[in-house]
Image (cartoon, rainbow, N blue to C red; front, side):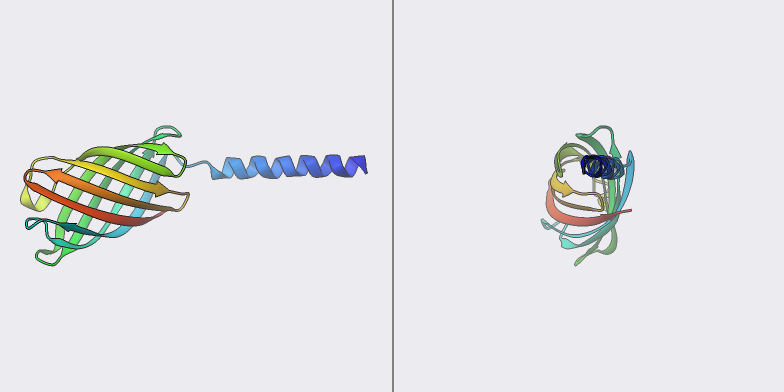
Length: 145
């Protein structure tokens, strides 16, 4: 009986160790995203589709360049919102700040603030981007490949 308990304990520890090793994130992760944005008279509002790359520098720090294309009411497809944020993670929750622009308007750099959640296979984020006389906010959801 003692051997059975000992073997079960060892098997349990191996399963836990294997799960923890498998749950570690890759250093570089790619995500496809979709969402919605709403802004002022310059940016309008509409749907977003794009991708994001997360460079996980440590357990709590990640750098995330992102490129979103919009299907706005006024502009159709093709308004690009490139940005890059430095994010701090607390478990699944992250918040960050960075820079971005509106490529179609050749706008100067704008400040971007975002808050979100990230798991092994999905990401959800809300953001505000402001500067150059324009402000817009949005929400994106993504699948991490």
